Amino acid sequence: MLGWRDWKRMTAPEIALQIGVLALVIAVVLGAYISATVNLSEMGITSGFSFLDRDTGWGYSFSLIERTIDDTYRKTLLIGFMNTLFVGFISIFFATILGFVIGTMRDSQNPGLKALSSIYVQIFRNVPLILQIVFLYSILIHFPGPKQAFSIGDMIFMSNRGVMVPILTIPLWTMAAAAVASIALAYGLIRSGVSTLRMVLTWLSGTAGLVVLAILLFTPEGSNIVSVPYLKGLKFREGLTLPVELIAMIIGIVLYSAAYIGEVVRGGLDEVPKGLIEAGESLGLGRFVIWWTIKMPMALRSIIPPLGNQWIFTMKATTVGVAIGFSDLFYIVSTSITQSGQTLELIGILMACFLAVNFTLAQIVSLINARLALKGYD
Image (cartoon, rainbow, N blue to C red; front, side, top):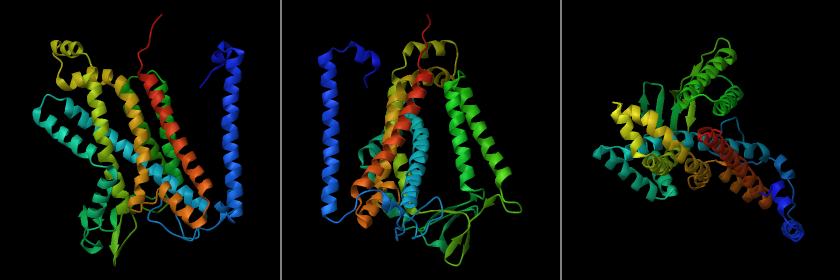
């Protein structure tokens, strides 16, 4: 993007050329919009966003909030967007952790760990993501039924209906507020001058404190803090049911993205000068201490930029859920186009949502990168 100083350095013909190109782009976009509006009107299809207030009349597999078939398109699209964010950020979190483990194993001196991580990367990086998700989905739907469900401590159950887990009984908006506060805390810590280790520990303890505070303040009086699922008839009651589509999506995206993140981490660790490692060894430092205090802090400066690109790719990868019927934003938009015929408006909403999310991720990565950059001294 051109700044004010760039414009000041331009000559009059160069400025006129820039203005002309901008005017041409605006004219082309405006002409395409007018042409599409006229053509849709001739076909009897009304344009605009008034359809958002109409009822959908159809259901879908998963939602974080209460839903019915009488929901409007506006609420249904919001649910799809929430599902996309839910899967995307959970996948980013676990893929990043697993990717750092795989990358560290690839950089280790242990032949067994190096071979095992190399096999993992070659398998999951070279098999298409959509194929992995369909394969996982095929396995999960052949699990036993609810009465024969696998149980972990009579609290977590796995069947062909999905995974039933305990859930906090506090309102969803309270957890959302705690999540926003946790993100704000992370932003403040990134902008501060605290060390990386102290920043991580402070964020973890602060987030745990926010969750505990939300439980104490907003748990309904006389009710249990945790709702535990139990079998009644042929259906599990209470708790939270995670459908097989959601489980297949998260596992597939995490395993696939972790393979790429592992390669990013390995490349960053390889770029650390050998002299620094030898200096640590000469001081008698152990392997873990060298990895934590020397290799990883130095490697992060080259890891973060490509890692941010992988985070953005992981968020976009949620669109493959349409192959197994998971109700993410792409699936909801696709179904809405079929039902309402408002193609341009719905595609525009889809593009705007992904643009906003990925732009936000890019800004977060930029902040982290600036936080880790070497500071110069005058």
